[in-house]
Image (tube, helix red, strand yellow):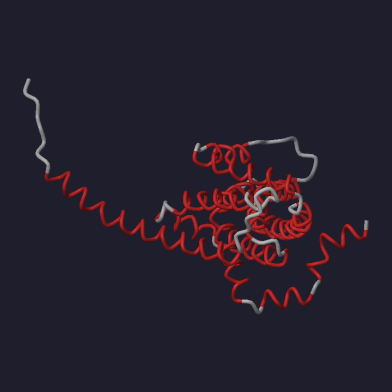
Length: 262
C-alpha cells in the first residue's frame, strides 16, 4: 500500500522535480498552455458555481462558501492528479480517456454540454446539512465533476504531475478570480471557445496515438507551442472576420430593394 501511494504521490515531494520545473522555460510554456485550456474550458463552470452560492442569504456567506470550495478543489485536484499519473500508464485508460475527450468535443458542438451545466444548477435535492454547508458540498461535488476533463486533458499533454498540479492550481485560481473577465473576452472573441474544443480533440488524438500499438509521442513542449499558435491564429481569424463585417453590411445596404406591386 505504501509503495502504491509512493508511486502516485512521490513525485509531488521530489524537490529536484520542483526545482527543474520552476527553472525550466519549456515547462512554464506547458504550464501556460494548461492554464489557458483550464480557463477556456471552465469559465461556464465558474458561472455555475457562482450561481449555486446565490441561495445563501448574505454576501459574506457566498464568499466564504467559494473560499472553502476553492480549497476543496485544490485538495481534490492533488488527489486525482496522483491517481491519474498512475492510471495513465495503462494503455486501456489512454483509450478510454481519448474516447471521453472526443465525447466532450461532440457534446460541445452538439450543444448538449451547456444544457447539462444548467441542469446541475437547477437540480435541487433534500438537504441533510445546514444551508451553508450544503452549498459548500454542492460546490465540491461540481468541482469534482468539472475537473475530470481538465485533469485528463492536462495529463495527456504532460505526464509530469508537478507541471499538471501547478497548471491546475493556477487555472482554478484564475478561473475563479477572473471568470467575469474571461466571459467578456469570450463574448468579444466567440471563436475562442470552439478553438478550445478543437484543441481538446487534438489532445484526444495525442493521447490515443501514445498507446503501445501506435507508440507516437508528441513532446509536451511542441504541444504547448501548438496551443499558443492556436490562440494567435484564433485572434487573427477574429480580426479578419471583424474587418469583413462592416464591408458585408455596406454591400448589403447598397443592394437595391425589390418591392412587389400589388
